[in-house]
Image 1 (cartoon, one colour):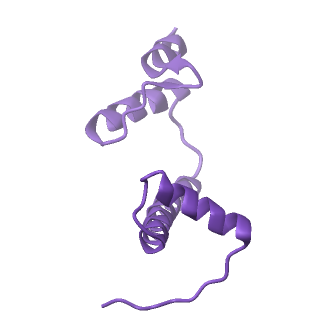
Image 2: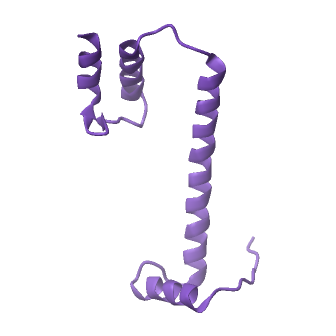
Length: 102
């Protein structure tokens, strides 16, 4: 089922959309807006997951593990999941764990 919506845009916004269509990124206005909505839904889902993870961490209280133990657990967990960071702020995760153990 589809629903027709009416929206009001500034001239600058309309020009932007027309340029995106002219570049071949989208075939029409509706396709552009549907893509924006899909991206917003995905971003919102990721944000909610992050908020839940932060709250879970806050609720868990203070850890009795060392920073090195936490890093090692995070590295192992990242190997199992789709998110596999190689570094944080230019520091290799494995180097950070090794450095903490020294």
